[in-house]
Length: 122
Image (cartoon, rainbow, N blue to C red; front, top):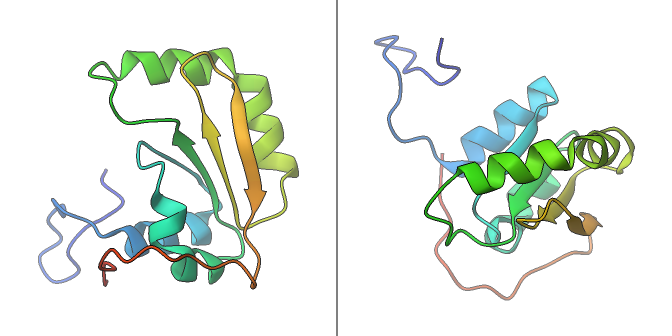
């Protein structure tokens, strides 16, 4: 069952905005895995509002085969679980194709971005 449905029609949503995904992952205490390694720069203010949000991004999104990232996460399973369990939240980290988690960071109230990309709205 899709976790994102239109409340009026109960049909699956085809396009879900990042802030909506943040909110749901925060509510359910899910680890958000994404290929958007710039997500924290784009949505820092939305991420700061989510006290239980943990994000793991791929180091880049150029891989044409998602199996590269699936294999990396499987290889790093112990480290991914440790990051998810122990990192103060909200937090963001990257995983490389070899399965190494890098750039672990707790997002604090003083974090900002100079990124000028338009923000998605719910």
